[in-house]
Length: 348
Image (cartoon, rainbow, N blue to C red; front, side, top):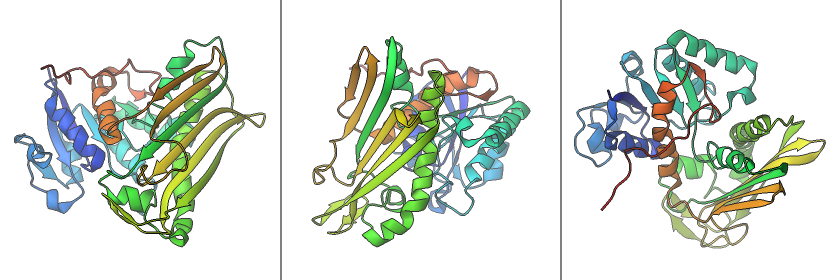
């Protein structure tokens, strides 16, 4: 029997997820919610360049909530930064869970405990009502800064410090709302400084989840999670897919999140964003690096993830069977079997 799936939002990540659902023979698309009225009525397959799927896109949330489905891939832009209601994602997720649908989200919730007991209780109540499961996932957080470091510590006799670095190149990112409105590239310095305070809150909320998850999994009690950030201004003018980077505007930023124990870092996540890595020399080149200090010392590098959006979407799609089979409640990556790309292999 195929698993019936709803795609909630079809932005940069959502479109990749929708392609993934339509290409997996063990999944059946039940519905698609869009936020852009220009997409209403489009066939879901044709929307992403595939043959017709027989499912029309809609903006009707009540209709989607009433649909029969096993799982919802919840992938809107995060309400904690976009929109007036910062709790909208939590409200939507709880409504979906209570309606009897499992939810996989890329808006955070990798480790809801980080947000306090009230948030956990609300989610668990919705899960109990619907007999459903919530799982938050992605690439970073959701894999590189939590799953992979924890997997490496399985080889450790002693762990002194966990260090994770992501460096991302945004020159090909298609979403102006993400590159300009969220990350802040192409903005004049004054505008960026004005916007960085709410963005700092958003960044801390998602990366603190990974830091706290790893610490709890390893039995370490953190005293606090510290955040630092800085930015770089462009010395030239050039084009990226999301717009024009003018001289003197923000073209890169660096964020560091440290989980401290007795004022010393136990886990550090460094996140570097570049508008165009070929033009920004400061800070490391694109890729991921994980270093476990202890016995033994270990370093793993991923020199390139050619399309991080596709990876984030695939990680969510591949988790569907495990999430649907899980016991009701919040399920982190620690609670689920390893998600594999079943049905995605293409052999010549």
